[in-house]
Amino acid sequence: MSGDPIIVTGGAGFIGSHACKHLAAAGFLPVTVDNLSTGHADAVKWGPLEKLDVRDADALAAVIRKHGARSVMHFAAFAVVADSVHAPDLYYDNNVGGLAGVLAAMKATGVDRLVFSSSCASYGVPDTVPIDEETPQNPINPYGRTKFFGEHMIRDQAAAYGLRHVMLRYFNAAGADPEGELSERHDPETRLIPLALMAASGQGAPLKLFGTDYDTPDGTCIRDYIHVTDLAEAHLRALNHLLGGGDDLILNLGTGQGTSIRQVCDAIARVTGRDVPLVEAPRRAGDPPTLVADPSLARKRLGFAPRLSEIDRIVRDAAPHFGLMPKTHVDG
Ligand SMILES: NC(=O)c1ccc[n+]([C@@H]2O[C@H](COP(=O)([O-])OP(=O)(O)OC[C@H]3O[C@@H](n4cnc5c(N)ncnc54)[C@H](O)[C@@H]3O)[C@@H](O)[C@H]2O)c1
Image (cartoon, helix red, strand yellow):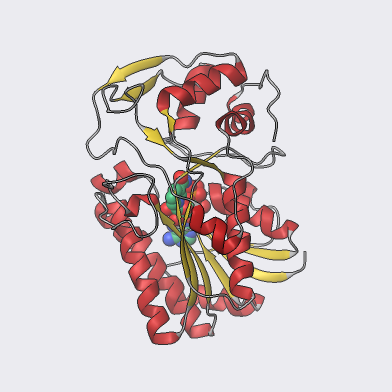
């Protein structure tokens, strides 16, 4: 294993592991720093795993020195909105405290390039869609606030110490490695497409439709799903932007296309031939009807455009991990 070492916190998790694969393919050496709280050691395949908690700034600084890394991608965080409402203390400790550890370790080692996982959850319930980066951030749950505060921590660190950064506000990460080497595995599973696939395969309960009376064409919530390998590509471009001396950026990562929950289920039926069993349930507090990105700034600044994020393609790549074989060919 060789190449310019990049510290990837959370590299054993869903998005971080896909980023590691992509970094390695581009000639970097991804050094995963992960405490395996929600990640999997067997997802770390393209570089070393340093098992530690990013809140331990001294241990993290020692790892940065050991590998001679000059850049960090910070994915490590808790990322389940509902859990953050029930245990906000754990979320602030892990997400804000974790970022504080990363920033302290970077300062101690003189490493000044950071790509940060922010979230569309930092916008809250926007007045208008699509959401561009100028949309006011009014997060409505503790998870979204940890990302909002994190962005401010990074800006303050940048102003004081010259930290160079790209903050990426992802919409809904979905899909899986097209070559089948990685997947989305959370326990318990909370994300829509895995839950829908588990329902369709009979491995899980019928999918709960939380709210069927939203002001959307079919009454269900609309989200902007972006393929995890497209996210990985955007991270690589963000890193190369910083390595090339580029300026600080805050960018949405989405497709600009909204897909309703019923449309996700239709895609699963189309691609796998299996219907998703559904039960209707009341709306959940704090679920905005529609969250769709205006993705134009990432295209303009990084030349980034999703290639794999059409919903049938996302389903095709995710389905085999839930025991469902795609029956149709999907281009892309
Ligand atoms: N999945 C999405 O749709 C989405 C959307 C927007 C933003 N994000 C952000 O992207 C990042 C990655 O999300 P994911 O879906 O891959 O989650 P994930 O849970 O699969 O991965 C997170 C990884 O971080 C590790 N980790 C957590 N706390 C740690 C700590 N204190 N020290 C060391 N390692 C720690 C976990 O073990 C895990 O491997 C998170 O920051 C999340 O908030 C995700």
